[in-house]
Amino acid sequence: MPYVVGVDVGPARTTAAVCRLDGPPGAPRPVVRLGARAASVPTLLHLSPDGSALVGEDAEQLAPTHPTLVARGFPQRVGDPTPMIIGGEPYLPEVLTAVLVQWVVDQVAAREGAPARHVAVTHPAGWGAHRTRAVLRALREIGVPDVSLVPRPVAAAELHAVREPVSAGAALAVVAVNGDGVECAVARRTETASFDLVGGARALDGLGGDHLVDLLLDHVRGELGRALDDLDHDDPGVRLALSRLRADCALAVDALATRAEAVIPVRLPRAHTRVAVSRGLVEDLARPAWEHAADALSRDVLSTLDSRPPEAALLVGESARAPLVPGLVGAALRCRVVVDPDPATALARGAATVARWRVAGHPRRPAPPPPPLVERTTVLEPVDAAPVLLRPADEDRAEPTAPPPRPPVEVLPIDLPPRRTLRDRVPGLRSGVRPALLGRPGVLAAGVVALLVAGVALTFTFQGDATPAPGADPGQATSSPDAAPSAPAVLNPPTRTPSSKPQPAKDGR
Image 1 (cartoon, rainbow, N blue to C red):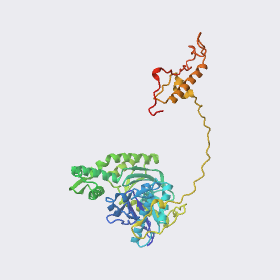
Image 2 (image 1 turned 180 degrees about the horizontal axis):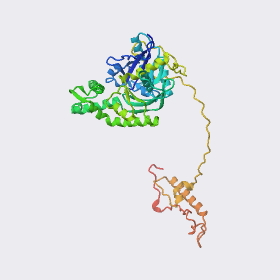
Image 3 (image 1 turned 90 degrees about the vertical axis):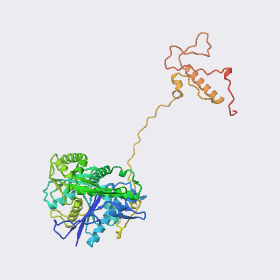
Image 4 (image 1 turned 120 degrees about the vertical axis):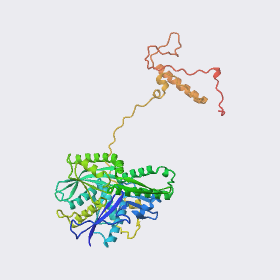
């Protein structure tokens, strides 16, 4: 049965969904179970020294014991020319993202029994042409040729329009609560039943599901007291236990979205207990940061729409149902809040919806072709068996091209300073102060200095307006009291007394 697939590579989790081409447009988009414990998998890659890669849960299991071989956070660094160093090898972030998407597409094809007709991959609303083209190039080179990209707010709006009619010109605020932050953008319905982004996207880093988990983990550590003080964090068993404790805190945050209380098991080497937490506790922990975030989102959305509230606010993402979030967002944006029944997979199902429109066509608009690449790319054979083989980033770089011609350079004339004379270079001659001779130079050096000073002094003396005194030796001259203040004083060469007989140098010269 022909189908298309949507993939959402989130900062923390990756999800996928399919859409049947022979079914009605409003048919459900089944979610593909990628992990053994959940439908989504962690956005992680474990890169072995032999060039192979493990994805998702397999990489997460090895992260505590092999942290330097695990790549995380690469979707946020797409387009960065600086490669990521994993296990001593450089890898471009877009190549790592393409490897993860290829693994997902292969998993879906194995379950469906045939490859997908088209793949739509979500990306943040703030991406420009440079990042999107980098990902498209990496995807097509690694073996996913029939692929297109869709902004995450557009994917959420398309999924909402399948369930609920949206009139032309209506604006929807899409708030994606991810693992490491919150992203908000406005999508407006066009006359051709598509969605366009309005204004820029607002991203608040350091706030989201991971922030709530960290707050709850700090609370649990406070409840345990000194049980964590003497733990050896270099012990692989201790690191694995702490990683499991944080995972249990994440499960508790998800459970508190629909329940009033949850219990967190603690299985540490010196502490085996259970910590009970409540929904109100998590709301109190998250309230200061989320109130600030709601005000920031309100200013951006309302300024984009000229102070008019949007028709609705769509909450998507793995942490969209976290305690306190829907109420604060609705109060800040002054509109109704629509939370998807499964917000963690909403973006993947929305991407599958866009993939269907691009293959089968929308009832009210023609299906546009996937955006082509200007650069020539080489389509590689897909890797059939796991693990996925990787190449370092230096092997994936394109061949260098000739640099563009440089613009003509206009050379401006430079005014050089006037040439300095000996009078300018010797401070003693400018101020009339006799320069002191420091140290004990040799006899020849002392004589040269004495003659130089005497010659300069006589030169400036004869250039002055002084007249010889009566009875004075014509060869002697004194400076006139009426001379200009700037005239230098006469410097007499130092006279040698019997007590100043030069001593022989210690080296015998």
